[in-house]
Structure formats: structure tokens, C-alpha cells
Image: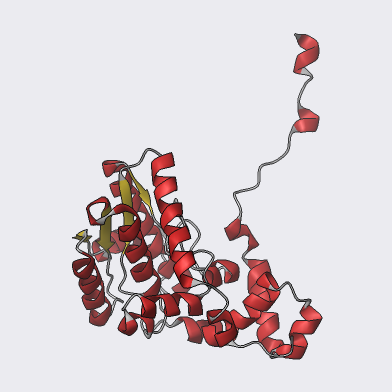
Length: 275
């Protein structure tokens, strides 16, 4: 294969069938956990919008709780979009300003370093995760994650933040595929929004990664779906982008697995012999 671009990735899936599979996935997991519904962090962005729509299709609006959790870095546009989404879907929602909680951390953590943008920024998704799990416990719900395949493979999520969830319904859809699905579902404006977790002022994903998802997703698709060798990928895509994708995947491996446990087999006494 000599040419792969984002349109190749967009066209690589049957969206109607994908929706049916995801709806069944959500229902089966909620039923299997004996849960009553799901709770979702609704940001006004692409992934949470599509996930919320799928949750309503799977469970009905009465069994989906949306939680809007803005911070001082959340633009008014995102808040308005989040409100539009929950109202359009007719789901119950809570509006919780996380700034007082964040400020409490800042005030009470010894040696808090305001200059460390990443450490400070990652507090916010972890605060949001704790809030979602509070309401999940309160109502016997599951926490529905909104991460997509691009973010998961790149490690572009906060460990025990937005990565701390019970289910990942769109975790096998690349970002450009999620955009297409949002368009199909009638949320064209949301589909066109630039991705941003808003962890600091002006935070944009593409600026942080150094490339757009239209550039990144074809590389991910080639490497992880088509399983083409890295040397072949160098012939198709920009070498620096391939290297960036591989580096991020390898460096974030710890985010995609459960914490390793030290194997003490050799230190254990032979219990059977003592019985």
C-alpha cells in the first residue's frame, strides 16, 4: 500500500454496524455489573458528545447522568456546548465548578509548584475522576470513559484521571472516525471543534503533539490495524511523525496496563508439602 491518508481511516469502518456493537457493549457491561446506569463527564467536546449519544441509545436518557465540570481554563464556548448537549439529549446533569477543589489542593499541598504546568494540569482530570466515581457509587452507576483509540495509543490521557473509567465505548475508534460519527449523528459543529483537554490557558492537543489527528491517525492505523513494518511506514509518512507516534506509544505503555505485581513465586514456601 503506497498511500494512506485520514480519508483512508475515515472510510475503514462501517459506522452503522459500529454503533450497534457499541450500544450492545454498553448494555451488556451495565447489566453484567448489575448497575442502574452510567455517569459521563460532559465537556462540550467531540468524544464526550459521541459517547453521551451512544449511552442514551443504549440505556435511555433516564439512565444517563452527565456531569459538567468546568475550571478557570474552560472557555465559555465549551460550557455552552456541554449544556447544549445534555439538553439536546434530555439527560439529567450536574454542573460542578472544580476551581474551589483545585484551589484547595494548591493551598494545602506542601511545596506546590505553580510553574510545573503538567503536574498542576493533571490534577484537574483526577479531580473530575473522583467526582464521577462519587456519583457512580451514589447511584450504582458505571463511569463511562470518553477516550478514543488515538488518545489511548498515544497515551494522551491522564492516568487515574480521564483514564480512570469503567468502560471505553469508543476506544476502538480513531479520532477522525469519531469526528465522522459526530457528523452522521447531526453534531457537525462539535465534530469541527479542535481537540483540547483545557489543562492550561490556550491548551490545544495538536500544538502539544506537533501534528493534527489527520496526520497522526493514518500512521496509527497503518502501524496498529494494518500491522505494516516501521520501515515501510517511513516510506509512506514523514519519518519524524512516525518516530513521534512510536515514541509516545512506547513511553505510555504503563498507562495501558494494570500496575505490575512483583512475582514472589520463588520466595513462597511449599504449602502443599506442609498439608
